[in-house]
Image 1: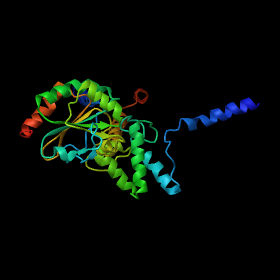
Image 2: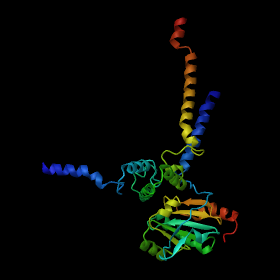
Image 3: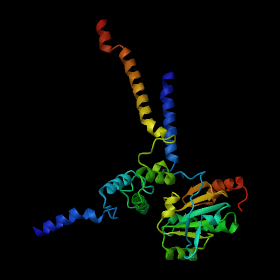
Length: 140
Length: 176
């Protein structure tokens, strides 16, 4: 029983050993929460489908370190995102900000939906105008 | 006949979109510094640890800033071409040794040759972040006013040099 418990404990504890962000947490809970939100919004440029929160690439670790530094220096979230965007471009943010360059990204889903809806309505209209085979046959 | 026009146009548009996706490497990101002032930096020199080197050293002339590291395979690949370029004297090359260790970088320079005017030693990668570096090798072309004219991602080849760098340098006047 003891051995089983020990095994269970080791298995449950193993994620700690594989933790990615091994830096010390902020003592201030609010700061820690801000930090975690920001690193979850920033793309790891080296491993593009991961946030810097999920990635153990050294670039992600460096960016986390810089964000941590800026937070301790009292920078606002907007200033931190600005820092990243001026260096790496809007692509660094998982939710790019609305601007001339990114407008198409934001509008495209709506436009596609409108276009698709338009096509759908047209097709349905045309179908409704068509005589139904059965009906037509009954009338004869 | 005309009922085929709309699907055909849609098909052609899709092909355009797909070929754009096919021939564009999403790992190659445009630099936000293109056409902008290059970031400045000051770091210890790789070969002379006591000496500070930086962007001030190439102010007023055309320069290449090449980001390299000993752990980077592409850097080894482009190294012979950098040496060749240095020999032609076409443009001074400045190295940014990124996220490396001094002994390894020094022995690289000793064994493979040194194409650089200097290599700045960016041990913790902070200057790399300022430059928006995300994967070595990266090569920036900077003009006399300190503007980034071009950024090359991956190993620098003769072909890329001829087609992407030379015209920009010729258009921008003499390199000295």
